[in-house]
Length: 195
Image (cartoon, rainbow, N blue to C red):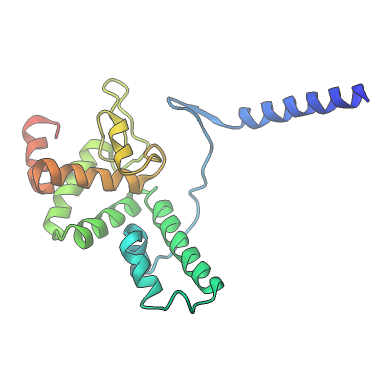
């Protein structure tokens, strides 16, 4: 009986070591590989719902009587919302997708026009090339908006290391609080090489 216990203990250690060895080391410890080869066609209404899930929950549920609605219908609406959010996060892992998500947030949630998005595009292209994994090892700035210190982004969500939508939301919030508009932030960057 003792031999079986030791075999299982050794097998458990070997399995743990194999699992940990498959993870990629990063500056933050272990980062598990994520798939980003999924091609997703996103309906613009789903994209709007995914970048602003709290406001769009009402749009998904409509004016239904929750007391009279079967639990399965509510669950399927929640699943649709989660699916839309996941699609926008996955889409934002690419440069083009991140730009699309940022443009939707900038125009629909903040009311800015395309000229402001043009300034934001120029700014974040210079800062990170829209790469959510961008990290400045000298300063510690991280992400699409190059937050410094990077931990500031946790005011939006704690997944700021791996979620480009969190980084975009934080960056736009920072710009509007500090400079009012992306074009004013871009002007600051052009004159000082930081914003």
